[in-house]
Image 1 (tube, rainbow, N blue to C red):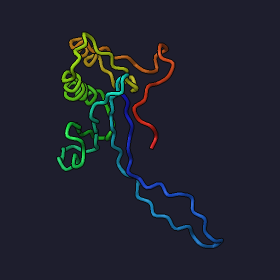
Image 2 (image 1 turned 90 degrees about the vertical axis):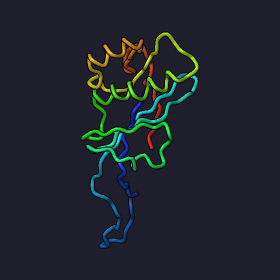
Image 3 (image 1 turned 180 degrees about the horizontal axis):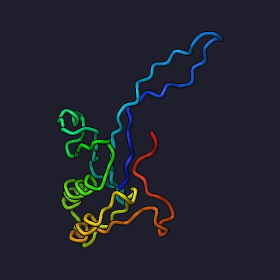
Image 4 (image 1 turned 45 degrees about the horizontal axis):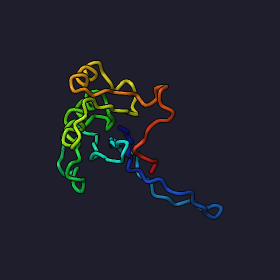
Length: 151
């Protein structure tokens, strides 16, 4: 599991202008941030994305053009927090993993998240579903797993 934030801001290139002439670039005011969570396994299979959008009321138009199985939720900041992480695991991750052909006895979820997103309630819930939560920056792993590249 990996997450990335998306801010639809225009980042203009460096412009060169003659001396005395102001460089003309168009920029937008600071825009809101959305978060995308992606999943991939060792053999390269992926799950549909999980979107977190800033706001209070969900508008189905936000999902226009998204894959049919993608999931979207709202947060006041557009960032993930412990309640959204649990919603993600319950309503999205387990739904798609349980529909796969192989039914493993335990699931290992290596996540690249901040520790504050994992609550005791989420850990207890994960135990009931044989879901082992494993933080990627733990000393057992040589490098942090990633689903996303910088774009």
